[in-house]
Amino acid sequence: QVQLEESGGGLVQAGGSLRLSCVISRRTGNIYTKGWFRQAPGKEREFVGSINWVGSRTYYGEFVKGRFTISRDNAKDTVYLQMDSLKPEDTAVYYCAAIRTPTFPATMQEDYNYWGQGTQVTVSS
Image 1 (cartoon, rainbow, N blue to C red):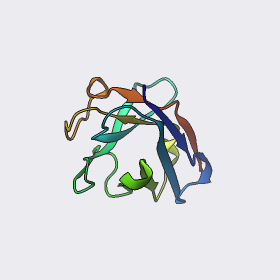
Image 2 (image 1 turned 120 degrees about the vertical axis):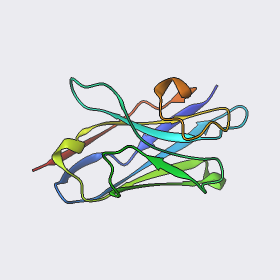
Image 3 (image 1 turned 180 degrees about the horizontal axis):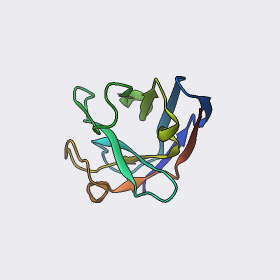
């Protein structure tokens, strides 16, 4: 089985930045595309962005508009979500996810095989 662990969430003021990390703490087999989703209270989980296996391609949800950047360090089995210019509407639980195949950009929840527990991000106005 595969375990994903997110960290880096917290409280930040509007306009500030946070960097989320997601490490694979236990794995069997290869992991390819990794993605980030978020879910705000009362809303459906939405796609934030994804990155392919080698880290050469990224794809983002429309709301990102250049504010977020996904990167990965395969030597550390870690994917990052750098979030800048945060807005109160970015408040949500952020989840990382991973796929066993090279599917990309993988914008649907159903594309992903493994999920982390989520980390809370709260942006105050």
